[in-house]
Amino acid sequence: MKEQLKQQGKFFNWGACAVPFIYGLCNRLYIWAVLGLIPYLNIIVAIVLGFRANEEAWEKEPYKTQDEFIATQQNWNTFGIVAIILQIFLGLFILIAVCGA
Image 1: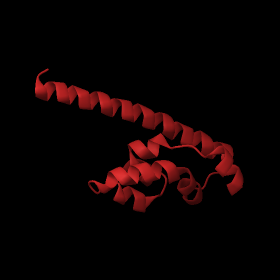
Image 2 (image 1 turned 180 degrees about the horizontal axis):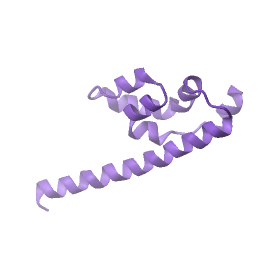
Image 3 (image 1 turned 60 degrees about the vertical axis):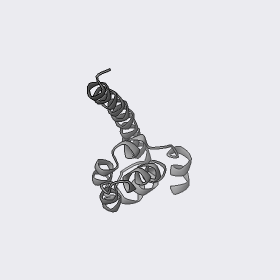
C-alpha cells in the first residue's frame, strides 16, 4: 500500500506549504504545526512539509481508502494555491498602500 501511495501521491503539497500550522493541526501532525509557528524556521518547515506532507499525513490520519486520501490531499493543494495567490495579492496591496505608489 505504501508503494502505491508513493507512486500516486508523490506530489508537492501546496496546502502544507502555504499554511503549515493549519495543515499540521488538521492532519494530526502536531510537531510540524508547532514548528510552523516559529519565526524564520517556519519558512524551512513550509518547504520541507510541502515535500513530506503526503507521507506524514498518510501515516497519521486514518483514511478508509487510498483514493479518499489522494482526493483530500488534492483539496489541500487547491486550498494552498488559492492561499498563496491571496497572500501575494495582499502583500502587493499592502506594499502599494505603504509606499503610496
